[in-house]
Image (cartoon, rainbow, N blue to C red; front, side):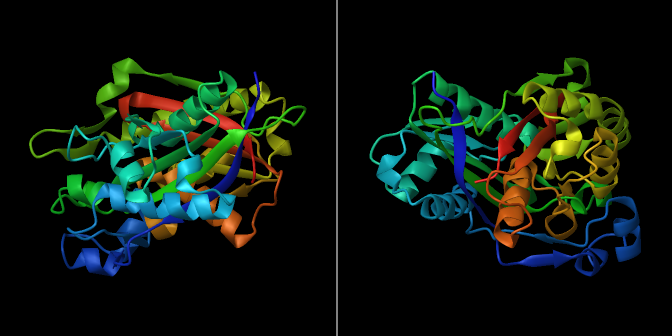
Length: 315
């Protein structure tokens, strides 16, 4: 079985920016209250004429262009999302249609904030097993559609966006570019993060998630590094789910990645759920904060309560 690698990444965010000052005019909050509790300053919000598949397709097109691939070269499309409005056609099929792909396999993966790292592991497994040669992996969410904008505990957190990666076989004799996944869930805490009801609304038990993430996740992240044959201090970057700066910063310290660049895109983008990891990773690549071949830990956690992480080599 051949290993796999990420050959390119891309991201997309809507043009509209919602600041903390804007939110202060909508609910009882302030810039000081938001930044002190979650570290977020701005977030991008999609309009009613910008569905999730459009966000996803923009990010996917950028990743394909960066990889030098055309849509007809992709044989599997995986889209991680929890904000699809319709059940069928699924989001992956809609993205494939927008990009003019002739006939890839299409699957959605709903693991909420851990969706992209689950989808990336699935792509890696498909390539290793020979079920696919080139895979488009997208994380995209329009959290503004499932948010109660009168609830200051949740509306200050969310943003919309998408990130994508092209995954291909590593080639004979080449080093693997996607390490083994470490994944799992805590079913008894499944209600800690929810998107449910009619209409669906995002809700969470913030303190429970904070305690679990800051105490349990460092061990899981270190195990993901071990599976890749690396120590945390070998990492060039750490890209955690961008849930809250008060979670991201202590987590990075407790993992022990003392030499790593830590993605802090949550400050500018808010919590974009399945989009947060590929969005932040793509920005690090675009900014030149990481170099080709650098080891980067990607680790998602959130709804269900699920988690998944792996070390990848930067494209």
